[in-house]
Length: 308
Ligand code: CP
Ligand code: NVA
Image (tube, rainbow, N blue to C red; front, side, top):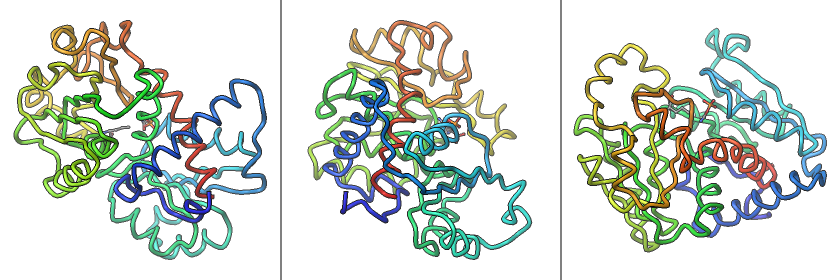
């Protein structure tokens, strides 16, 4: 635990494959204890401040219920209510919260706000999604893949859709020895810098990260198919343009036929049925989407238990 105490969880880039495997192991243990009814008050008396400037169901509930199950307490701080919403600087908020609570989770637009918060806070800062990254989701996703496939190494994960925060964080599954293929339209590729970083980290650990334009070619032989919305939070005005640009970048029956016959289908949720995924696939036998959502709870408890 010592190597984790006090650290931030801002991006998967910062953690070694061994550290990620350890977090997954702790998540699995906590999940087992919860299923078995064994209490685990590891964070008794500790408080997590949760800053949200965007909507959330899973992330909020996973952190809030999670810390309660660990014996601690969460504060839900919407930007509509706290002074950040009226222009108080992040760096001031960071120093005030440091003196009162034991950890901060933030979901916001600008990734720079997350790193600024971490710079000025002397307590762990957890990135609950920025426009750039969504690392807590990917930890839960890796847990889900391990549960279904009993390994990570050597598996092919194909992501079809927008080169967004989800794509950026998923690419770091490459350093777990996975073969990650990102299929996006040319105009919606992942950020070139983070793509290169994911490729370099993957290469060091026997994995591979690729981009292709053709979603069907990308799905060929996949063990895991993954998608996310075409228009993320904050991109509502681009929804109509994106709807056109992403035609074909959907997981449907045709995509499933290209993948391994025992491929699993994942989506971080919320989903737009009929856009990035069909109702048939989302509700179909290969979908593990609700196990994936549940695993947010267990994975986030592991993050808090280790960092705080
Ligand atoms: N997947 C995810 O982060 O869900 P919420 O937006 O509901 O938190
Ligand atoms: N890409 C999506 C993920 C939501 C969990 C968004 O940022 O809105």
